[in-house]
Amino acid sequence: MKIAFQMDPIGAVDINADSSFRLAEEAQARGHTLFFYGPDQLAYQEGRITARGCDFTVKRVQGEHAELGPMREVDLADFDVVWLRQDPPFDMHYITSTHLLDRLAPGTLVVNDPFWVRNFPEKLMVLDFPDLTPPTTIARDLETIKAFKEKHGDVILKPLYGNGGAGVFLLNKADRNLSSLHELFTGFSREPLIVQKFLPDVAKGDKRVILVDGECVGAINRVPAAGETRSNMHVGGRPEKVGLTERDLEICARIGPVLKEKGQVFVGIDVIGDYLTEINVTSPTGIQELERFDGVNIAAKIWEAIEAKRA
Image 1 (cartoon, rainbow, N blue to C red):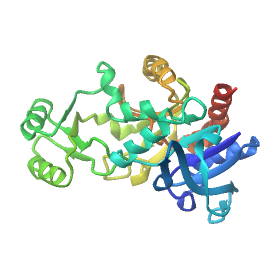
Image 2: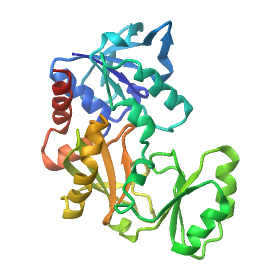
Image 3: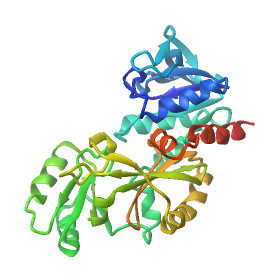
Image 4: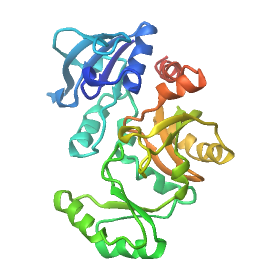
């Protein structure tokens, strides 16, 4: 198949951690051809969805891991699969790219389905499963957020469309910084904030569970660094081998059919203790760590699901 990756600069990725690199590596091993372009190079031109980018090959040598061909313009309708893999922020630039990629259906398969990526971003899809999630409020109004904090004590405050642990704050019951943080966030963004009841179980780790076409294939545990509340690997969280609990499987059984129906082939959910906190559909990570811990080729499972859809 002809595969295009819409992603952040491939030359900067960590080949031992980046999921997009691993997906490209596995695609190449299966005989597929690869094309790379950045989201800024996506365009609508008189009825065609085009991109300016490069054919590429990969090898597992950091710094020499991507060999790029000459820049050229392509019609994305000529591709079998387009991967939507750039990282958030989930802003209007990101949303616009999903609208453009929508126009490739049904001839080209976009993974994950951009319509539902747009309508089910990380911290909003979980609202469909309130019995699985910690108490949550989404608001821009300071008094609403204050009332939630007064009711629940220790809370986590974070941007609604952030990623990688950026801008995440733990506010304990005696903390006096809520108004200042609200002023800071609302000063540069018109987006609401999300506030959740703090889960002390995060000290034991924040579990990343990987689902492929709605089926759970394994999990890793991300343990916060000393002195940190955040467990994201972007900010020093340590990945560890972990098994799946009955609660994890219950959560996956509830959300898996929805993910499959909405064309979300590669998804990473976050579970702290017994609670689902996020459903990551934009550019989830974790497959390389899971492959090393469990000895299972997760990238192959993802491509098998995609190849079956194309067949």
